[in-house]
Length: 469
Image: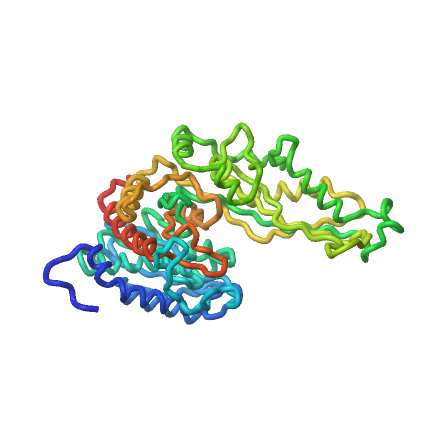
């Protein structure tokens, strides 16, 4: 890197001047496999992440071993050394990626390729480009730009984990174990896509998750449905009836106490919801649907972002091949996921589900529940003093008005920072809406990546001047 110019340039000008070199470094990061499900490339990638942090202006960077995949904790201090008086911003991301089958990609998933996307704009195609290496690498670019120009205005702590694509199993353990090092005034997560409209958005949190397998077993083998059907219990019927019993006649989730802890929406929450643009006709057309499941009392956006939901993710029983096979299956299984909203507890929901199933399991069928994954919901108050500085920063970074949303419809582990560190946490995605995360030809638009780096610069500057008390 060249020495600092005689006259101090702006961070944005610095980012533009080193754009080509930055993209080369991002390509090197994306070329390194780091699949948490299999462990492929994990250790090498963790080493590369640490080196990148130090090269991009962080004062310290450490690989932290966990009971699972390693994480990286890095610090960039405003004055070159830690100070209790400085405001600290915690930035979170993950270096692990989803598996990728090369035959499904136009270009190899770990050979980053620059080409135009469907919109004609330049994009970088590689596994991890949008989810999530490209997004947190924008933080590194911002820190280096500030370090080399006007100075880093706040203390910055960067936490990059290696298990997000496997459920962030040890993230809460890590944050508790390293709480003093991760202590901050606000947490900021750049993950996920921007709004379908092309506008950036600021999300006050995310819905939680409870994923459960239900398995029912009956006879010790599959049976002829004519010779045995009737007196012999059918596990498939048992599973279907159990699933049906999870909703009442109005379509509401029928678990005892399920809605008791749902945080009520405030007037400000409803103002935010009403301002979120959505074209329901366009949604139906895109998905080939004649109607949506939206009820008459609650609008599409409210149900998607602020209401809990029960989804049947998979069903498996009996014969599903061509033609006919009159079989009474000996086993059946369903996979279900609950999306939970602020103040609901996945543990309480699982306990209620267990009681519900135990009370309704039919005689002659053994039903077992297996808890696969869980993540608590989180929502920062719309009145938090971090919200307005974040909106200003996103507006400056993207040169567009951001959309404020009460929650992400999906689940990211923001609750860990809100609960363990007791700080407000915001989600601001830096990837394009069609990033193809978890899919072939994953990508990040260069315009989005650059806007993300500018946003992090502006965020640190805005927060340094904000009164967060």
